[in-house]
Image (cartoon, rainbow, N blue to C red; front, top):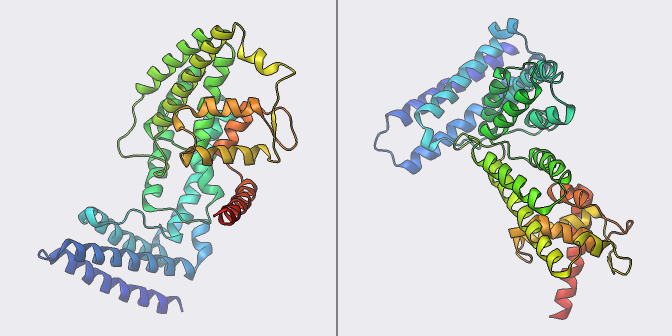
Length: 367
């Protein structure tokens, strides 16, 4: 049975080679035709790889060096050679958003699981757990969602970042190790909500230890300058559907600075602190039937839809925390609202969608 499938795969592989040769020698072929043919070849190679995987899934889940001479692995290597040929010689037409095969998902999972154990052993004596989780979040996220295939670009990113992390020298100086790891986050543009939340929390802790607006603004200026000097590899990012890590943090810092300036002006104008004003017993808060998760999601929708200007997200969230009540709490933490703003829950998405459906129904009735 195995020989039958192997021969079938090799027959299709030979046809694929001829098709690639046709593309390579057709100099007069239009770009659109080349693009179509390259994409067709990519799909054939992916299908053949998955066919090889389905012959013996367990073979790939616990892969060992001794298996590299097995016919299944040799067939996979031949297919990977064709894919690499397409990527190298037809790069302008190559679809990097294509998903990787089941074999590559299994091999990458094995590689990352093994590497994480070694990285944990090296780093945790010198860094705390939250920092380690942030540093390795791309790998943790991949393993959690390993049933979902990732693209060629994402797989290449994970391998490059893993190689880089393994080269970081770990010594007895904790601050040096920390700074080196933070530089790596920017170097590889780890633009995920988890990294953003970790880095902004670190800055927020420093801000909370300062007493005056002036010292807080000076700290934020220094952080903005430091972030601007970090190097980021061009055209490289963890999530291509989000702005870069530098842009995310810079926007947050300048929003915090603007909020502090406005707060200082209010204090100067009324001769008292905003905190005391908010803390007065006669302040009337708006009671809602929303959870904090739902409230944060609605604030995000309002900002991203253009109902609220996006130039001061931090200030907007602080205002909401100080003037709104959730369904269960009269006091809302600004930090809680901010963290839920960037990571909406599935439940809140469903609940808010129901509210929006009701609103759409009301709009139709008013028309």
